[in-house]
Image 1: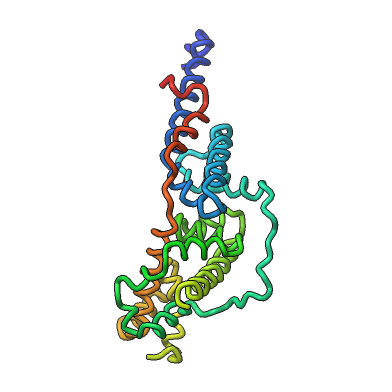
Image 2: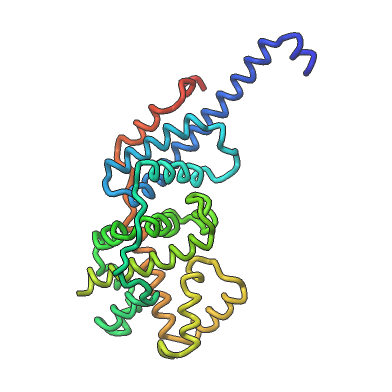
Length: 198
Length: 82
């Protein structure tokens, strides 16, 4: 090996370049296969379809430029979402406080209890009971969440990331993920109850 | 077996973690043991499970046609060689 390397430095360099190019192509293909999943998460993190498309394009542009910093064998979807959430923050998203007046800690069963009160306890057993909440209601309720909460709810409940992955993507401690998720879901249920059952 | 039953309160506390598959084995045993015997909590468990699925499905929007082509254009210059 060292003999041929010494004898044919150009061929060696050529092989190295070719092998790196193959790795890069492989990376790009794997990333492109995840585009739909990345878009689905992005779409709920920003307000419009256009913004989501732009954000995903910026994400892929950056990912393709810095593909060497991806460690093969690790979770590429989480890696892409990490870039995406960083870009989303860089876009000048303002630090947002949870509105002080919003009554927060309703019970986890808030919505279930409201449905039970409106339609009877047995209604909770019906397969179609949640479908009475309108689809637009869910989208609007997610959009209305303070964005720190929304990002976590979107990553875990839509993107199906684990708490640990969401913590890594957002660069916050896992305890923060859990508390934001917990509160975010409660606010979401409260909004759904208000929108759909009144 | 009402919302004021301490066992039901404990179950409510564990339920989101149970749905997230994020409980310790000991907690799973407590949650499942209670759910087995309590209609009130079992209904709420089913409701929460369906609600999650519904939220995931109704908030999920496919990538628009044409976006994949735009992303493909962003690939490096060597992309078509291999």
